[in-house]
Image (cartoon, rainbow, N blue to C red; front, side):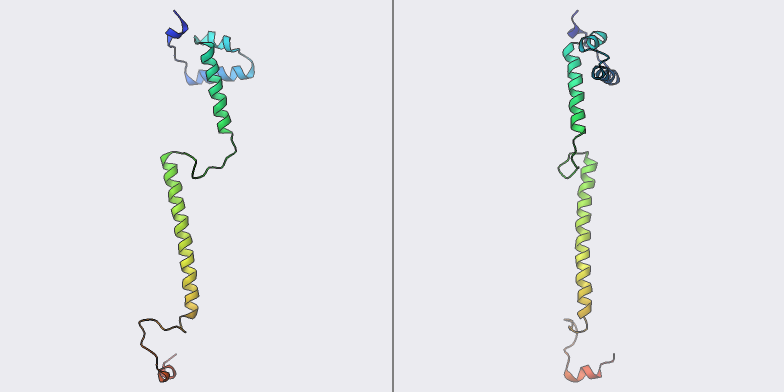
Length: 125
């Protein structure tokens, strides 16, 4: 029976041991393939996928909005952005109100009665 027909499924932990053995020089590709009943190409594929994943995992990029994550991470990022914007808007509004409070006594409100020259002197303060 050919190796291809066996369809033996090697567990992930064992594949990791094989790849680490290959990288450390303890095993050759053909020896690992023979021990686990798979082809040399299969073992080479394990090694290549391991190296590519390690390369992708060690890239020095900062996570940001374009980074794909779980749906919960994306939702939290979106909520965080919305909260930052709301806080910034509230801070601007607060500063406007504080500045406006400095001039509140000098500018009559729309609901106040029009002032007459004699009213100012008689108003209690």
